[in-house]
Image (cartoon, rainbow, N blue to C red; front, top):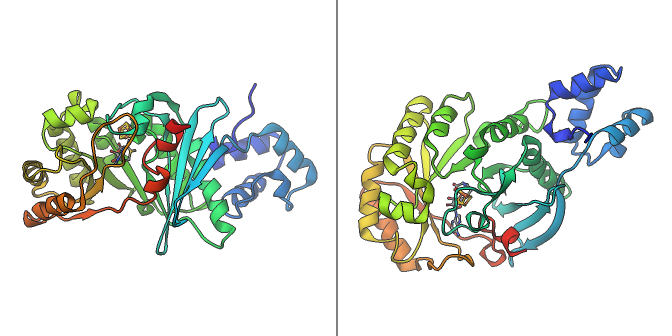
Length: 344
Ligand code: SAH
Ligand code: SF4
């Protein structure tokens, strides 16, 4: 039998486990505070607990599923990417970005991805497996410990690493709630951004959760023909269905939605695409993030140059659509989605 994995346990689970051992319930809270607030790496550090309990915890619980394999830092040092292996050998990666006062983590929700987007390194490697809630949570705790060593804290979390979060819905939501837990790291829901390829049923379900996370939708093309070429899932869920789910989300949450658009030269950076995109977003509280394509081994497209990116942005702004061109932070370390794992 494999031992229970600490990060997969809720506070209730941990309390049940410890009371089952004959320990008082307050021990669970003490351990919870130790791991999520004091960021202690393992039971040996829990010096406020009796030695026998420390030993039993170490013996009967698993405290880590993430085995660091390799890390890369961008030239300016502000972006750090770590490739981990899970106990079964499947890869995942997490990226930490420093920008002004922000310390943002880009977290994976799956090893690989089943959506097969043509331009995405994770899509090119295919699906390995879902991460458990704990394996999502541990990525944050891992970087929180490293940041704490410099007196810094995690400020924002984007679910934009490997995988499609809404294709691993339950574990993703459980992870967000655990990180949001007031007795734990207490990271406010508004600090989270969930990015999805656009799964309509799951977007509607998310709209009905009582959780104020930010939603980003990876649109990338404004007509079905082009979008299906780039994102095969569009054959199952065409743009109209995605947009209907987004309108439902907005009606329920009254929150602004971000649309992501990887700018690819002469493919989706044309005036026609800008016009169609503006038409799709008319009347929605929306923001467009333009990200020049990160080149990947398995895709021939080129990033738009500055002039084309600026022209696309202006075409949207002229039509009243707020948008920003995102800098490609960490491009020198292939900090794009899935790129480190698939080069390994
Ligand atoms: N599966 C989710 C979240 C992970 S991908 C999603 O697709 O939204 C996070 C973002 O990176 C998505 O907008 C995705 O389209 C984008 N992306 C993937 N590969 C990229 C690349 N090579 N260049 C630029 N953006 C890329
Ligand atoms: Fe999966 Fe997102 Fe990559 Fe598409 S872009 S393959 S949905 S991780």
